Length: 613
Image (cartoon, rainbow, N blue to C red):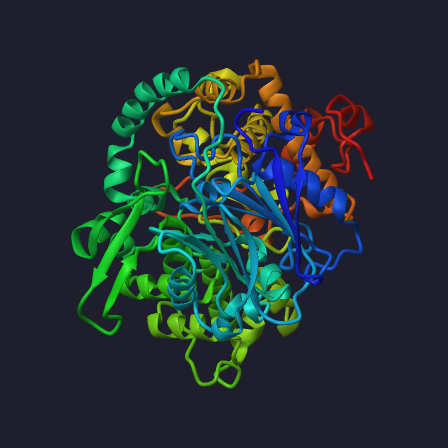
């Protein structure tokens, strides 16, 4: 078998046992790896009664055939479990170096079940797997814990670790990955799943190579693409993901004031250009990455100094900055660092704080609820105080750590009207009133309001993918073709999350579908063509949908929040329009061959070779 080791590590923390199981090549061909195999195992080993925070909810992490192959921007893996935040399919994709070192230990994936009777961590290396005591670091933040764990294992190890938020089961807790840089598997509460098992960390370091079917041909194929990718992403690399903030604000895509406000004169204060000219000290890159979009910053003066390390990315600035109207870049950087230390999702944290600010403005919560904190728009210190409270689960922070939907239902007074979420997940920093494809994908993506499920905004702006039938950018504000484009992109992104490769390789057509298929065949020795590639992505997407429909998800849940369907975003130079989600859904279901209620038809299930449990 090429491209894989063919092995899964299974850990039962209740029994403190580990075992190795083999995977058939047929399963790899049908589901590839990453989210594909993760979804298959999650579907097979859970049911509608599985408690997201119970011992029977498996925490699953999978690499893919690209992992460790030197494919551009392939130092990634995918984590899945039933989400404690949404109650449905939970997933988070993360870069860094953990995936590569884990695969070098001789495994393609790991499945963790049970609950240890005391805090532990896993140490996975060339010579075996150890379940070690973590009592002495339980309660420490992710940075301090990581330092301790590297000293106790290997200085070059990569650590997937939870902070205090995950330990205390905050439903917006993520898993911080610390190697040569910091990356987070932040979304859908995977950190709480890890905490529910009394698992503090998974530490990995390995040296084993994965066999490649045609190593010379693969190396030759990589070279021109890497050169092209570096060229077309020069500006992106220089200014990072936040380099597009000012343009997105101009387009009406950047979120402001809990998605209420149209324009923001302060947007330039938090942009990637300002970061570059003020606090930036360098760049970081995930393993095998030719782009290096990560930011290194240093703040030496002011109330948020000293601060040195990883800087905030676009999504973090969009939620902690734009949604809260905080225009202080050092303050946003401090909040970002605190989220990494506590192990929190910056998107859900920023969105929930913005929701709380609106509730405060409306008088639904008061200073009596916030321990005297004036939770007003643009109040940087209040925003940072709330991050501390959420991370420590203190005061109102305990409720905020449950996410904006549960908070809204708890405080009442029609607060659900302005809780911006889909299926309980707060949206990324892209407005569906500007990009309808993004809105349709928010409504239908397995984990909720996820921009990465389709990356539709990029394909309305400029990108094309003729290999899958998208020869021109999708025309904005049109119903015709929108559903088909969105579905095709969702299938393709499922394949990216199965291989696993970064979304940013699509910039400037740096890497296209033909490149990806070519590499997959050179790595595995297969003969996959475009039709099989797209069918495999469709199989994975439908499997995730079947997981959710088994839990009762249907058309009634494929909605957008009232703010996106009733509040027009108007301002100078803006032409945003409310998405006609009803018509878009009908077109989407028809294209996918799902029922009018959004459930895959038996014909579709059979054609994809899926089984319903």
